[in-house]
Length: 389
Image (cartoon, rainbow, N blue to C red):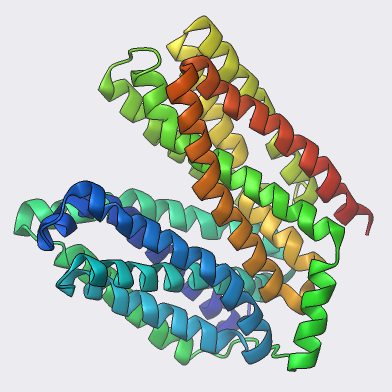
C-alpha cells in the first residue's frame, strides 16, 4: 500500500473515532451544560436538536461541495468546525450561544461523516466495503469511550474540559495530518457537478437507496433508544438488566461491523452482504415480536442482539455500494443519503416511542418487526438493480 494511501486510511479511522467520542459525550454533558447557563434539563435538550439540524444540513451542503471544490477543503473545514465548536459550547454564556455552537458541531460532524466516507472509498478501491466496516468499528469504539471519558472529567475534576478538550485537540492533530497528506482531488466544474447531481437524483434506484437509509437508520436508532424502555417499562425488568441489554445492542452492532470488515468483498459481495444483513434483521425482528407477545425477557434480549449483529454491516456496506454506483458524484450521493438517514433517525424513533406509549410493549416491538419487513422490501427493490448493472 502506498505510504500516502496508508496515511489517508489512518486519518479516516481517527476522524471516525472522534465522531464517536464527540457524539457520545454530548448526552452525559447535558446536565452540566444546563447548569452552565442556568436552564432546566428539558431546555438543554435543545442542544441535541440543534446538533441534529446541523448534521442534516451538512448532508445537503457538504456533498455537492466535495464534488466541486474537492475533498481536502471540505475535510479541513469540517475538522475545524468540530475542533472549534466543542470548546465553544463550554464557553457559551447563554443557551442560545450553546445551541449555536451545537449547530456548528453538528454541521462539522455531519461533514466529517460524509467526506470521510468519500475519501475512504477513494483510498480503499475494491476493498471499499470491508474498509468502511472497519471505519464504523472505530466509531463504535469512540462511542463506548466517550461517556466514560466525560464521566471521568466530571468526577475527577468537576469539568467537561478534559473530555471536550481532548477531542478538540485530537481533531486538530488530524487536521494537521490532512493538510500534509496528498488527497484525491476529483474536483468537477460547476457544469459537470450539476450534471452528476442530476444523474444521481434522476435515478429511481437512488431514491430507493434513500428510502433504504431512511428506514435502516430509523430502525437502528429506534431500537437502540427504546430497548431499555421495552424491557424496564414493558416487562418490568430490572434497570441493570435493561441497561446491559442496551449496551449489548451497540456491542452486537459493532461486532457485526467487525465481521463485515473480514468478509465483505472477500467471502461475500457487498450487495449480498447487505441482503444477508437485512434478512437476519427480519429474523431478529420477528423474534422481538414473539418475545413481546410472550412477555419473555430472555427472548426479547436475544432478539435485540440478533438485530444488532445483523444490522452491523448494513450502513457502511450500502454506502460503499452507493459510491460504486455514482463514482462521478460520490459526494452528492453520500451527502443526500446521509441526509435521508438523518431524517429517519429523527422521525422513526419518535414514532416508535409514541406507539410504545399508546399501545404498550406489543406495539413497541411491532414497530421494529414491521419496519424490518419494510426494509427487506425496499432492499429487494434497490440492491439487486446494482448487482445487475
